[in-house]
Length: 516
Image (cartoon, rainbow, N blue to C red; front, side, top):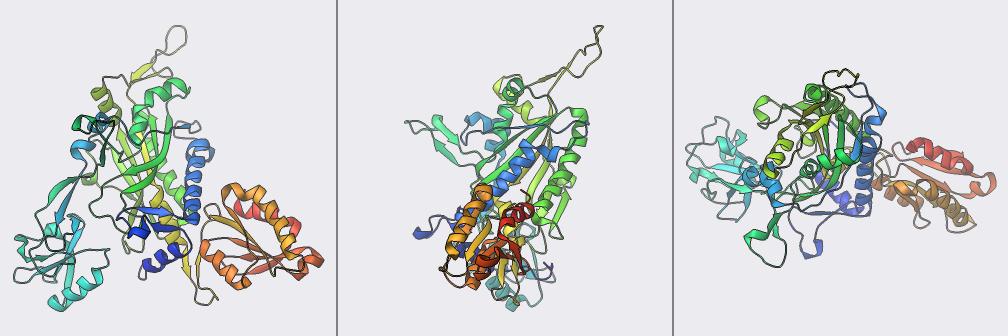
């Protein structure tokens, strides 16, 4: 994709709905802002992405590579509850500090993140004698606001609302018609809260987790004591998280309910920088193998002024989405969190979360080591599965006007929700029976990782087009020649090229192409 001509997000969203990847939650009731549901193909695509993460981060971490310490990377899984003790979020800092600035529009009743709202101002930068038009850059009103601003200002530029001098009476908010409708910014806590038990009062208030990571820190000692792992090791966790975003936007990119895949990797403080660099590089490489290799993927090291007070380094794997172009949006953050989290939970809970390392310390007369007690440092690669799935769809979306059906999804075979399709050319002459036999064979071998489609209706061109839009990499057609020479037509999604292969070799061919 050229940086000068991003893909159409409207076209991508339309395909996602048409082919059953992503639907608006509560669609028949008009939807609910910030929540999205996955249809059959979307649910399988996201499962494939989750399974790939689980395989490459937990079951066979880093594809069996050795880490900076010279040993193979070791990781174990964990599954923790969405609701934890409310003191967890006090210790982590979420209750007191998990806030975003927001502004309200008194005219439209809209609500916006203060640090996301931009404004159009004259190129001179002096809006003192003219109204300033505000917008949220990815909202549908952007084109309308820009047109209105250009008509008023002529040459314009866009800057953050926070950089515009007071008074606010000169700012026309997004979708508003009159200036002076935006309130002063105020802090807004992103935590969803609810009540446990029968008595609905503050003493029973709990929170939906805003991240999966804290559950791992709570069980660090339990895992270390029961699973016979030794530092350095990682604990991985996937699951739903919730953030009451002021302005959910950009399809599934920023929503109020989302799924994460996070690893907390615990190591000795002296080795933490090396492990941070190791995980930073591996996670960038991993996303490339998922099909995001190219100019749309970058690894960005945070500047010092971006870091959390406890962080010793953070890098983001970023992808150039159509709605961020020419800029990038975060897919995953790799953070060196030091010993902040374990220290905080030890302090607030009164539990001892130190680790006794028998492989360290001075040598004793008997040849054993004295051991060392310390609070480990943590490296956290934290990925968003919804953002990952969206990036794969955006990257895979391809339009080729020279094809009979111009739109298709060029998904990596490992991630593709449909692995293969079997098509009898016509529903007679014994072709469906041959096709059903081949379908059953492919399903037994590959059905655990995705759909194996069987379709004998409509024209073969329409069937190919439907599979192209669903991201299916290979279609196998049973035709008249199949009944005489036992070969089938294999069609490649990306090129549209066709070749004849023996029906007895289809499973082997597909296994090689899918890497299974």
